[in-house]
Length: 488
Image (cartoon, rainbow, N blue to C red; front, top):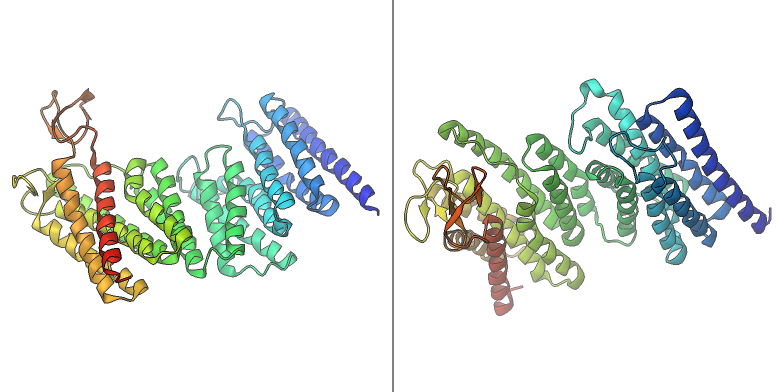
């Protein structure tokens, strides 16, 4: 068969199959009034044949890009024109998922055709992660309805586990067929990332994120940016994520952001930073759960509410920036700064959680007056000691990875100082409000559904900003010591 004939057949078969699938799906939907979700997912899975047609007839030539570009235009017309009832979701007026499907594959194909065609098998893995793993997830979820556990965004534990398992099988199959020699750890960590992309993806948008996440992860591994330690941390990270979801420790949006932050730690900072972060997150979550229950039992005051996105960013954004700078500049002191900021934030959390259990109310660090437990700027002997112990225990990671006792003592000591700085900033800058309805003194700007009056500090400064500023000052102190003395 000549190349010209093969390409012509590729165009004919590709679009012929595409239209046949659409027509059959619409006909079955109208005639048998099938379940829309199942019909949509079955059509979703059958599009997997398009990749096979493209591979055998068009390869990774410019023609593969052209058929995908035409497909995106056609899918756009179908989607925005509301021409396919079988692919519409029952829970929304109009679904754009099928358009996102075409768009994500077009972008990846463009990279293959115009930048690097050796990555073609990775595109296949990403494509089938979307087609099969995402397509089968709701089917498995329905099959285990009686014994399933709801997570977030309408997603379930059974669906998430099925995405993990199917992704691993897809990657293994492609590794064997195309002799990619993907390690077991890489395959499983890829499955972990894809499962989280499906879990956190908003309705329809996972047709974008799954392809980009799977392809991007494999490309990073291909070019040596993901060592085995990083892959191992990424593999186990979803366990923490799922446990925190079930514990209600974070809001749904904060769950997504916290996982992305941890992923950024792993990619930019490597497994040392990711392992430190994951360990501290788990310990903080366990301690927080225990102290919350004891505090509520003793005082009758409800435990802390779920943490919000702004709180996650206040504690994680600076570390991500430092890790990214380390990734690109390879200046080791930047990685040390990222370590210290994480340790300071962890110790501050321990001080707050454990300190609430002190027999006597805390004392304002600047005014030396008794304040309510949990009030910013309040310190207690129990909280201060827990902070001190936490910094030197968590600081062992500095000793482990930097192998320098002087750096260990310096990092731990400055991290502890950072917790004191946090208290000083909380006492001097953070806004404290008086509720005109109930008379309570609170850190909330709105209380009893009524704007509260700022009686101390600055109304614009809240606990999240104080946490960010204390982390920034802590990092600055460490940078000054390290660069000034040359100890690293």
